[in-house]
Image 1 (cartoon, one colour):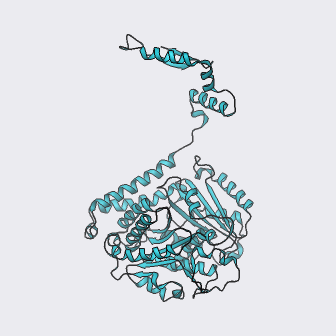
Image 2 (cartoon, one colour):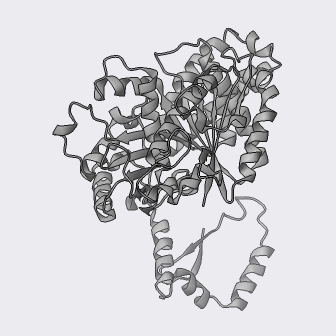
Amino acid sequence: MREHVHIQVGHCGNAIGFEFWDLISDEHGIDSTGTYKGDCMQQLNQIEAYFSDSRRGRYVPRAILTDLEPTSVDRIKASALGQLFRPDNCIVGHCGAANNWARGFYTNGAELIDLVMDAVRKEVEDCDSLQGFQVCQSLGGGTGSGMGTLLINRIRELFPDKIIETFSVFPSSKVSDNVIEPYNAVLSMQQLTNFADECFMLDNEALYNISCRTLKLLTPRYSDLNQLVSSVMGGVTACLRFPGQLNCDLRKLYVNLVPFPRLHFFLTGFAPLTASCLRQYRNLNVAELSSQMLNVHNMMCDVDPRQGRYLTAAALFRGPIATGEIDREIVTLQNKNSSKFVEWIPHNFKTSVCDIPPRNLNMSVAFVGNSTAIQGMMLRVMDQFHAMLARNAFVHWYTREGMDELELLEAESTLGDLVSEYQQHEDVFVESEEDFSEEDKRLHQGRDLEKNGKPGLHEKLHESIGSSTTASRHEQHQDVVVDSEEESPEMEQTVNQDGHFAWQA
């Protein structure tokens, strides 16, 4: 069994993590005391992926809850699921990070990080076959961004061969409660670029728009937004927790979605997203799910995928769905949206099928896309970052915590390089046959003949030119000394149609 350790950091990370555990506990038939109350043995087949068995009939989440102030963790302890979590894995401070990345990374977070790593090591020791770590965090605050990335840094050093995936909430373009969010986000992105393997990007503004426009909620609350995030997390992790026809774990996602090591920031989406008052009028099938999952209004990031191209993508289906039907729909979808996918990565759409549907639905799909459009989110925060840094605004709050001002410049450079790399691979095109020169066509034709067992250009040259002739010609060529261009004209070697060498002035 491939186990995973879940870590939720900061106020936002704990809020998202709470909804995630509420969702999967219900799907696996686990009540608030950790006792199994389900009605299907498939719920227990792969439950060890996220739960550990206490040998007393109680299942305990393999989760670590941490924050630099106790409010968010205390709220979880006082909730209906409070008894579900191991008390030793609830690690809190009392000073807070004051929305400052440097306090979370260098000072207050560094004082608490050893206790958190001790809890991580204990959970890892209890695993039989650990596959990776799952981190929930916000990139705009101080604890989730600063201490969260410090934790990822430490985990990478201690477990270099394990997968680290993050569900990271990126600062919104309009909705913000923290003026120094751009600094925190850029500094966090530098660490995620270097030490994380898979980053599922989320955005409060996009989640708010989905709640208002699609789900028809008049006054969405943060709990409504967090439930949207938990639906994506449940869809991405379903194949880890339940059996299926085409399973997909973290490492398979990593191999199929990340063509280059640094380009591991994903757009996320979920379908179906339908207002409760409209569900009875909708025909839910694979075609409808496939159409919804690529819809720009279903993306949980504040970017437009139509402004970029997909390098790779994955559709993680749940429910009693035939794989043949999925394959046909994906082929139709790619043909219809061929301009949205790069041509130089063939078969760049990964699919998986989990037999167990989510709660209250017959079928669903979680979409994960590695799109070059993600650079729009990065460019937006870079512009805000540069505008403040050019005037040294708020920099003193970071240098007071022992941080060097050059680290801000280095982080900006790292994110700028990442944007350039995305743009570079978006602009790559596949050369058509007309773009090849006559010489290139002749060489390719010769190689094709060789592959088919027929004498190619290289074999003809080898047969027509004996080894002795080649050696003598090579010696004569070495003895030739050209004093100047006027005395000895430049010679050019060509290959005629018979496959023999010829020298021309």
